[in-house]
Length: 307
Image (tube, rainbow, N blue to C red; front, side, top):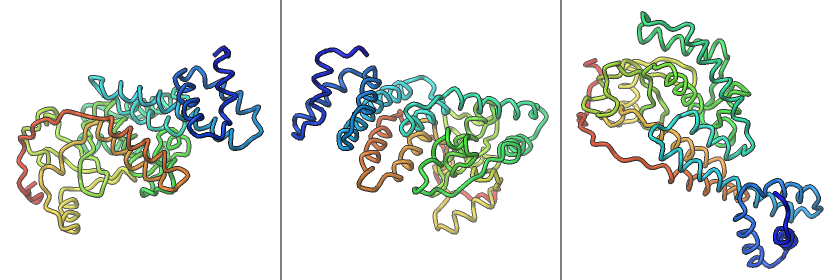
C-alpha cells in the first residue's frame, strides 16, 4: 500500500506510551485492512525497539485475524462446508501466510492413491482397510494422543509436513479423504473420544429417521486406523459407566468437527502471554452455527449385542 501522510503519522504514533492514544492509532491502522501489512512489516524491519516491534506484530496479527473471521463466516454460511477448507482456516490462525496449494496437492496425492485401490466390489471393511493402508502404511502417518503442549499436531499443514498428527487432526484428514471418495465414514459423538464410524450406505444423513447405532457397520480409531466392533464400543461405554444412547452415534457435521477442532486447539494457549489466542479461537468457534435438525431417531438405551 502506498504510504500517505496519515499512514506515516499513524506509524510515528505506534510507540506512544499512552495506551489510549495507541488504541486509537491501532484501530485506525486496522481500518486500512490487510493491504497495510507489507508497510507494517517494513516498519518492523526498521525498528530497533522490541516493545514497538511487539506492537507491530500484534497489529499484523489483528489484521490477519479480522481477515480470518470474515472467511470463516463465509465458510459457515456456505451451502456445503468443505472440511479441508475449514481445517485450513484453523491452520491459518497460526500460519497466516500459509500456502494452501501445497496442502491441496498432498491431499490430492493421497486421494488418488486410495482411489486407484478402491472398486465397487469391496466390502465396507475392505474399503476402510484401503484408506487406512495408504494413510498409515504408505504415507506413514503417525498418531499421537491429544497433547495441548503440541499445538502443531492439531494443524493439517504441519500434520502433512511431519506426517504426525493427534487423534483429531488424523481423524479430520481421514474424513476429508473419505468425503472426496464417497466412502460413508463420519465422525460420531462418543464421549471423551474422537471416533469415526462407517455408516451403511442406505443411512439417510439428512433426516436421522433411523437409530444411527444400527446403521453403523463398525468404528475407526483415527490415531492408528484400528477398527473397533460394536462389542468394543459397548465395553467402552460400560467402562465409563455411560448408557450408549443413540445420540452418541449421530454423525457430527463438518461445522461441528471444525468447531471442536478450534475448541481443543484453543487449550494450547492457556499461558498468560498467549491467552489472547485462546480467547480469539473460542470467539471464532462461536461464529460457527447450524440449525438443529429434528432428531426422530430412537434415543433409548441400546444394546450393541443385538447387532
